[in-house]
Length: 264
Image (cartoon, rainbow, N blue to C red; front, side, top):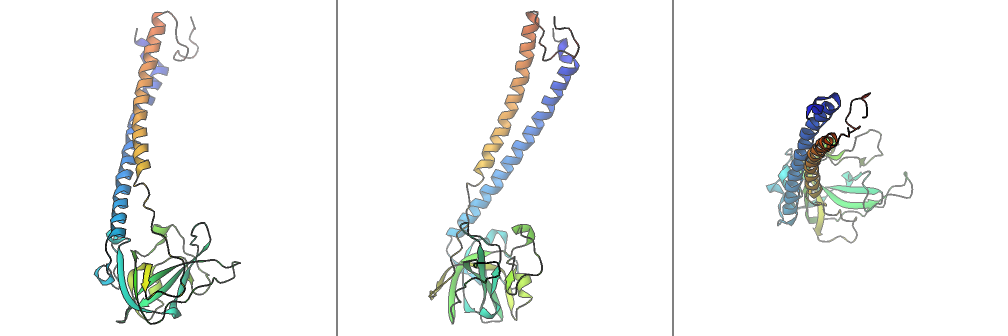
């Protein structure tokens, strides 16, 4: 009764099922791993955004890279802006509008400075038209902002290229920008949230990061892949039982007979 399970077509079906099951197990485990990673990242970023600000020097120093665990941590730093070394960051859309980020070094008074992303400005009317940028405040200011690691091609997905207009960059990379400056830059940069005293005019603030659903879709996909395992096994058993039932009734099932075999 069960010899049909050893025919070439059924052996091929057994092989497919045996290959599909571990593949679905692997895909489900991978999605669960992504869920754990994204949930941990979401929790970290949320906690850093909500934490009380701390002085910048507690988390960053010249030549020191920002720790991943300190991303988006709120910090405070005092100094004076250096508009002579301000930069614009190209290809930074906001709310669906093309524009630039405005970078201005904040000199802290001891031969060091930190790059401050003062916010976003819309692009000019044409590609050659420079954007309108509100000037930074003069005199001593105190900045509160989100601490960010330097951008790289790998972390941002943005490729560097030569030939940019003067005063423009593609990446906010403290190491690269610091080579052109007369003082040492703190690793990473600060994304402005508020400033005292408040300026009369300022670029639009950069929104808080969207932490998303913490990997909820990955969890759903992981469960889905593992449900497919049950479907594959259930379908395999159902085909076997149907074949047995049809053979007992004297009705061979054409879907599992070898090619060229008689149909009755």
